[in-house]
Image (cartoon, rainbow, N blue to C red; front, top):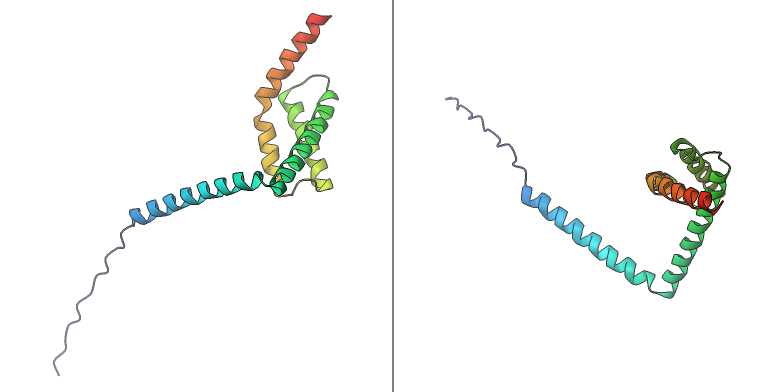
Length: 132
């Protein structure tokens, strides 16, 4: 019986489908835009307005708590600011006024605002010194 040689079939390496990746990116952008439009629409509804008021209340309360912590410091430094932010986030983590998953994001946001806080502090300090 004659034997047949089996030809080794080479599998072609699959090409990366760049158009597929671009399509996914475009779909993601469209979905994000649709979500933004939907959120904006929701915030105009009575429930959305109430939710927005609640968020503003919580943000104001958090700001007040942070200012209280900062006033305990003799001098405002980046380290003192980071410590105060840490204390405020720990407080909100215990009270559960903020979702635990949101705390790192809020902490990072507050820490990213250090330059603005420092600038405001310096301007306020100058104003107070001028009044004396």
